[in-house]
Length: 620
Image (cartoon, rainbow, N blue to C red; front, side, top):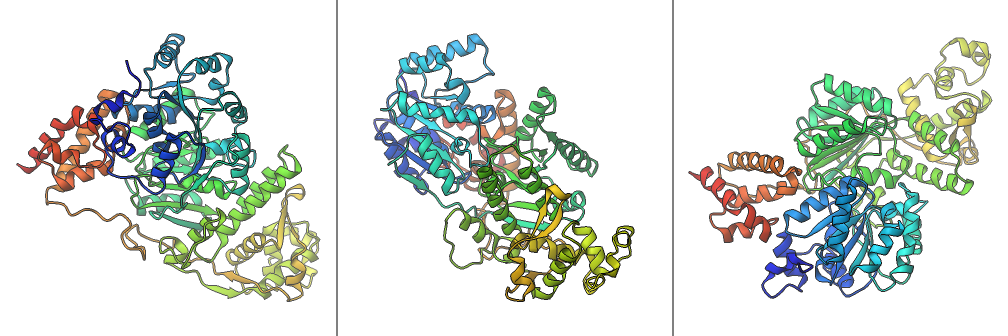
């Protein structure tokens, strides 16, 4: 069988990228830099591609693999990613396969045979599998169209998800110098980009950097008070019945949170490395294949999950960096519809993350970089300005206007006040108590609370005792958190998280440094998902006929049946946007159905008659 069989239906224009895009994937046009990237790689060029989740990275290597002679080799770190992408490609009529640890010896041998016979368009390989002598020998005998290194940030020790097995991928450039290489990731700061380029031999190759903006995602960070209750309220009020991901730092917290949500009537499942592998796989499959399931997970979950209709991502613990935050929140709204990135955050989160850095076995240079990344994330959490502008600015993207209209600070601007006196009181209290105590004790001293510890150390006799009784405990916690974020205080993990003054605190105490503090919010600041962005409705619905809701329901039920029969996720059969398109346009003929985005030649062949019958039934 010939390679690139998916091109056979392209009627004489098989070598044209736009034609393949339309006939195979059912898409009418490229987005952003996709076309430039596709043509560059198809012509044999190497490159680095940074494109946000949902931005169309996969097409940047899938199309050149179809347009070039041979098979495209895709290095992917997660089995879930391989499985979903291969299922989608097979639905589109592309000969794709995986080579990973889930295959038996006979199954792997059959994939190897097909590769050597020229019967594959794309082959997804785990990095550790690719580096085995057997696989390298196999690739040396095959006709290779290109190498695509997905999730390329994993190669960088400065990245948020470093994987040692990725280091060995540097040999691809040495062993296959004439085969084009494309490295792809959704997030990487300047330091990470430089390491990707160096390790993968991409010096001199162009970098294609798309905007990191995800305008459909609403960013919201709230002060952590009763996080479980806050999370339940957020889901119940804003995302009832929606699919979502909740991230927690520990396995115990994952299980407790999932149980609490389930008790509140929210279908939630735990996911972490300590669970039985079978249960973990079943929970992941339910999340992917069913509607409205919430997965509560450690950060081990999510990379490579293609589920497009995740309506929210929530964090109950602070991530390690802005890169991690961006990557994890980016799993919401891959379909472009309005979605939420919500996080509950407090001083304890900073202390916990700082302790983890201090107690790690990493070199001093690594710890310094990690602390810098944590400081940047804390600054994002504490900013009184536009969160989107600060987030994009971290990745070197300039933002004009300063008001995105779709983050909590832009929708409900926080009040600022002159905090110089409060800061001086707090810093003086920390200094006069010997810089040996944590936040709670300092607050007790400031408000004049006669606790056992206060009297034990004689702190009721200090001049700072009671000088802060104009503020309550919640307000003082906000002051402490913001001074830590500004760098005037730091939590010393070696001294039981004692708050210590930094060098910059001198300027505050002398009155030389201005301090503006944001007022603690009275409660949940964005109460309903119906709150409008100043950009307007971010996902306007197409004008539809009155029977639209009934037709959509019929199409979704049909899709669910097909997905069960074929043992694939529902979105692999048809994306929500394609179902919405069919319901809006109500095609009556094959040609009209063919014009719906997401309906390529193979899907038209497989499902065309059934879809038209559903439309006709809805109109009758």
